Amino acid sequence: MSFNCRFAPSPTGPLHIGGVRTALFNWLLAKKNKGKYFLRIEDTDKERSKDEFKKQIITSLAWLGIEHDGNEYIQSKNISKHVAVAEELLKKGFAYKCYCSEEEITEQKEKCKKQGIPYFYNRKWRDAKDLKIPEGVKPVLRFKSKISGNTIIKDLVQGDRNISNSTIEDFVILRKDNSPTYQLSATVDDHEMKITHVIRGDDHMINSFKQRQIYEAMGWEVPNFAHIPLIHSEHGKKLSKRDNASTLEDYIKIGVISDALRNYLLRLGWSYKDKEIFTKQESIDLFDLSGVGKSPSKLDINRIYSINETYIKSIDEKDLFEFFKEYVSKYKKTMDQSKENILLKSMSFLKNKAKTLEDIWNNAQYIINDKIEIGTDDKKLIDDLSKKVIKDFTNEYEKLSTLSREALEPIIKSLIDKHKTNFKGVGQPIRIALVGSRFGPGIYDVILSLDKSEVIKRLKQI
Ligand code: GLU
Image (cartoon, rainbow, N blue to C red):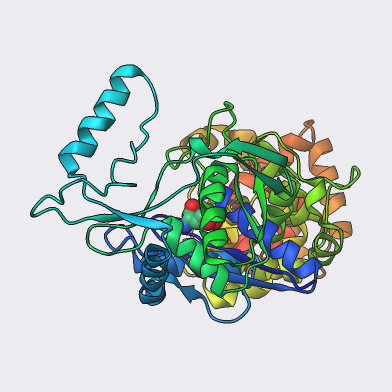
């Protein structure tokens, strides 16, 4: 059996983290089964769809390594086909024109609200042979949903879902302006794209029941459905765009590495034994919808940081530097190219105290900036003893012909003895002089990462 999957975002806002996971699961299912994964941009809502969001969706999915097959499919280009299917449904008796005015619908909605029941169109025009068509009202086209019996969807994640057909209203498929609705467009496109598996959030369950009726009316093969539980915020609520870190861009901005985020999202609601970290290939080989849980997953930012930290520490330093450069060029100021070599060399220790690429950026400021600024609190720590330590260290350091940890260690040791202090008493003033802060990388790493002349210049400024 061939597998065709798709992710179908609406470009009405930045890509949400839940959507990214939906894309990932579709991509994995397709790749695992040597099938195709398509990206469909559902841009039929002309007012809310924006080109900038479309571009952002495409680039951020590519950033994550989720590449779609072929060109992206632009839904608005297929509208005439959607309308043609609506007309065919009308002709076959599976749809009807509804002439209810907007006031009438609003009235019905308010009535339901008062009674505390969900709004449900009263099917007034369904068999309206005797009703007089009102003047000046343009009709919408409604699908004639089944009224009796039950429908079962064999959901690949949720198991069998059974509902009474009477609970599905006669939903609109063409609006008054003849534009197709989501229910119609998505179904026609999924059919045309030969989609075999539709994986989407479980808030779409009811849509699947509606869309299934369109497939059946048209005599089309119904795809498999898999509804995945939504991602909730750390407080257990449905994740909304107002939550911090709810969009993919939020994570890219704080310097999360794509492999780490992909891995986190993979494990969010899916498991394989107790394996924690998966390479891209392993995730393709091992992914299976049977491993997807049925309850909502909670977003855990600390877990993302922790996985990111593991990646930062374990990946090849050259690769880490490439991630870092890409990150800096996107979100920070440009870096002087002459600093690239020393930064690359320094990845070996800069990565140690970093959970994100932004941490690396902050810890590398003493390399990136030629002028360092010493913070007020740190300045206060430079007392007379510190000044003496710095002076003595500068004298000894200047004499060194080879620069290495082995050469520096005896100097530091002798200064500890001479000034009757401890490692901090010597290391801290030197670090403040070189980095501008008492926090930062290890003192030997700092000294050895800078040019000799730069070290001397900074020490002498104290
Ligand atoms: N455009 C819809 C959404 O973003 C697509 C839902 C579907 O996968 O059919 O929610």
